[in-house]
Length: 209
Image (cartoon, rainbow, N blue to C red):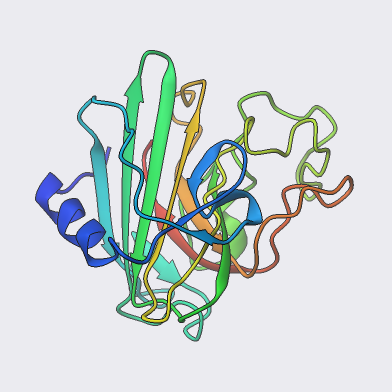
C-alpha cells in the first residue's frame, strides 16, 4: 500500500479541523448528501492507519492524484486519505485542502487506479456486487448502491476550500479490488435508477486499500 509518514496526514487533517462536516448513514463528516457543520469525528478505530497523501496535478503529470477539473480541484490542491481496518470493519477518512470553496462534492471508493481518462478508475467498489451491473452499466439499484455496501465520502468544502469526510463500513475490502477515491461534481443520489450517481468525475486519487 502506498503510504507516507503519519505526520504528513495529521498535518493535512489539522489544516481543516474547523471546516469539517457531519451527515448521512454510514458516514461521519458530510457523507450521504447532508451538510451539517461539525468538528472532525473523535471516535475512530485504534488500529494504526495507512496514509496516502498526494498533491493533485493535471493528467499526464501524476499517477497518484489527478485533477480533471481545475476549477473544482485546482492544481496543487491536496488529498490525505487514511484507512484503518479493525475487527472486520473499515474506516476511511478523506481530507482535502485547496479545493473550490463552498462547493458540494461526491466521493466514493472505486475499483481501479486513476488514469488520464476519468473513466479509468472503473465503477464504485461494492461489498456485495450488483449482479445487474456491468461494463458501461453502473449499479443504480439502491439495494447495492448505498453507503453501507459502498464507501461514500460526500462533503461540502468550506469558504477556504478545505473538505473532510469519513465513513465506517462493517466489512473489509477484498484484496486488490479497491484502488482509488474519485471526487464527483455533486452529492450522491439515493433514488432508484440514479442511486450512487454523483455527476462528472472531477479528480481521482490512487489508493491501494
